[in-house]
Length: 428
Image (cartoon, rainbow, N blue to C red; front, side):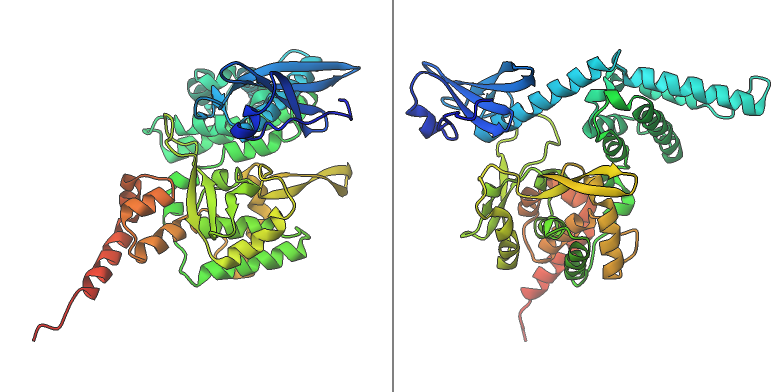
């Protein structure tokens, strides 16, 4: 890319309105530019990237939100277009890497290869052609006949695996689901080793995170409501673990925002610097991608304490408003025992906090079974106990009134009793 690029003012609708007809570019990565083509009515977002050997790639992404409101799909605002541009280039590079390594391997081919190797090993161990377990029956019925089977492995994302797991029949016994999930995990992990040159470096994390039990639906997770005194213990422990692990505040801020907002990891990982409104002492949390249809709002405004704002100030100082708020260092292995920092990137997967979270729980003196999701449950219950209407609690935590009433009914009753008791007056 040219080092003398003249960057256009394309970040806002008003700024774009004053541009002349033509294409205006803005660098979003060293080798990636986001473009805006000024049209008669509405402009178009473009992305171009350097392919190597003097060659460039360029495609049109979507319509700009000059006349219509952004919908995150066909009409994009600047932050959405930036994200779409990065995703397109990343996807293209993965595709090129996979094609160069040979025939594209799918989830179906992965499972079939795993079953073949596994059954050959079992026959050799047991003799007489006997098979020890019915893995083929389970995988054939629930994986090979599902939409997941056709997915190219290099395109696999954690959300694909989570959606597959959640689509399993409710009639399946927990033990069957556990065995089925373990079989699929073993198949995918085997492919991750044998086809490493064709797959992204983060494939192991994708598999691990995608095939975790859904904490939000787990009865055990639903019961993890922390006493008010335990939440500060976790925050204090996070600060200790952050300092001892040389996280430079990244881990501490992640846990602090989880506790302060009660939002899901998938929501706060998408927060930007501009989502911190210091003067108003509130955070704008992106709505979740759960559910169907278009959501009427893009962010939820959540009030937080000045202590939270103060802790986030180092993360927003002198940074673009569209930059990810919560980041961490990505490390690369340069020898069997030596890792070094490569670059900073957003927190991408909840599994990235598994090890430090275990250290935090240990430092806080809490049960080892305590999950990060407990911070969300605790925030919801704290709001209910404070007497906030159920509708407001549901809106603040991006869920439904029905879900609040279903999973927190006991706390709603307690809160109502406390409010009713305050209304009692002396009658005689």
